[in-house]
Length: 86
Image (tube, rainbow, N blue to C red; front, side):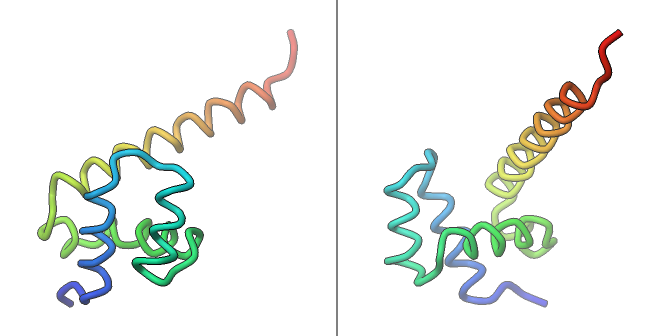
């Protein structure tokens, strides 16, 4: 199914923001009418969509790399916390 207008708006909005912060969260509320939590939920699902990848491959690949790096860091921290002392 092709991207909806909202999906294209999310991708366009994210493409404009290189840095994350409070100003971005306020812009999400004002420009998109979404809470930041909902915005990131929708964006997370959207970057796994083949149509999103076709629409803006560089952005989607960058967002996937960032997500994967965060996941690796989380797993690394979790393994350090659960490792038993020797």
